[in-house]
Image (cartoon, rainbow, N blue to C red):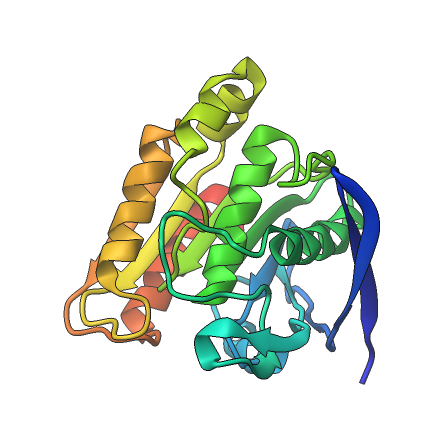
Length: 252
């Protein structure tokens, strides 16, 4: 198994935390390479399971990169260690509590995208905690910086979040509204959110509220899809709509 180290600094101190990411799985395009999407798994999962599902989608011109999160103790699981993009306790709009962990994961994702060809459209998607990381990436892109103030280096063209939530959305409107560049970048980035009304892990209200916060903060192209009877998992109808949406936004 291959590993990638990533470290992220804090703007207020010189200490750096090094995190070790697991194996990255790549699904190469079957047609002409027009877009690359990093897809992020949920808590306790790995990149392999999603790479198999994505490989079967009718999107031949997309390259999928499916990294595996670091293994770390997770507060909501009582300190049990498993693969997680960041530490998380009880879900709330006040977070994120673990900005350092989020920044490290989002930096790793941006690094994966930064080596792609310049004529390829770039996107990020994910499920559950992976969706939270994708949405946090969207806010970093809009603001032009990570939570610690370091510049965000990637030009994103699409974000997809399934059964997830927006970490730390409470102050997002003020953060973006204070910068003309941030307003412009937010307005340019299409986001698709999907959530099951019967989700027992990340309640539907978190998906709905995330959509509202993003829209009010200046993300003008937010699509929010809901699914009756859907719990914390995906179904073919949802993935069909994701395919249609990506096909329209990324030219695949």
